[in-house]
Image (cartoon, rainbow, N blue to C red; front, top):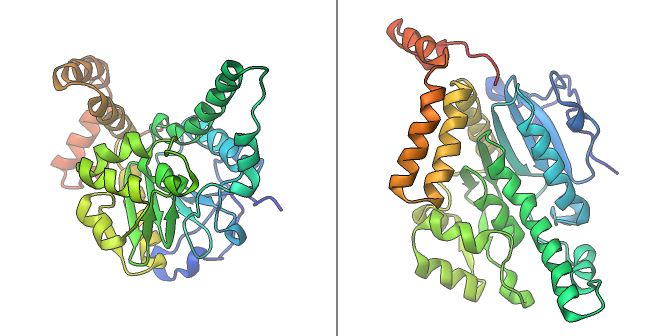
Length: 311
């Protein structure tokens, strides 16, 4: 049965949270694309400017079936155009974050490729691979910062997903596995391209990709894959929503401009990135958000004391 997105919980607490930091969901301001519902995702508005996207196939350990790959694109394209959203939290329902690719559902699609000759089969397979890649690249193309909260297992395509997020937290029971070599293929939807730029150790990336060994939470933090580790899922989600709320309190012009330029700098030389930054800010520095933030700081209200309009 399809998950009901943005359902008004009327006092129901997500993840068993209690007290003032509880995660409340509301339909207010939800874009039409998100109200229609998804089979594999559950979307709630946790705060005024914060959305929570939950991988929602707990009975299947959030394995990624055909519907998931399509719905990730639909979901984050809608979020990208939701002017009231300023930050996104991604998590997994149930006992684990994700078991990765649903081979029972997707495997046949990858093995049965249309085409009359090898070249045409290869071309059609390439189109499918590119479509899978877009399901996670859409997280980067959406300029709203994405905070991912990982608990339990994060396997295969789950690692691909989190590598496309901006901030990565996990619980102490989390573990990570670049699993693809164990099923006879090279990871092809982002891990091999993004992970080396995240952890900064090509040797470690090679080891993980070649051996498919598990990496536990302490190692994930020490190598830079995640920036913070929490005792349990409850405290993990609280922290993820809290940092999303802190981001949402800042100027969306400044935050989204920062994400755009951080990603550009990752993929381009420093000199070219500086030129891009100058061209970017020659327009963006004209925003009213700058004097509003400066005035709030002078009034000792802090940046969060300023009110910024939606972008």
